[in-house]
Length: 86
Image (cartoon, rainbow, N blue to C red; front, side, top):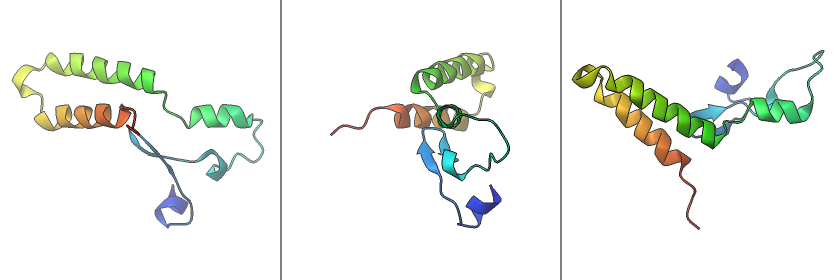
């Protein structure tokens, strides 16, 4: 994280923001298959759709006391999950 903040490493964009790239993680001495590392640094869209729905249901329990900004953020995550039209 410090290397990324200093501009020495990149990141991959995701619906929830920037994620570390597998090649930028120091896994020296760990027995981690590269495919597993890719999976660990990827956010599956279907799982995220379910998570957003669960968070919305939870927030509804607070009624009007739930901040509108939380709903706006969920809307933005859902927007970023939509496939890009070509």
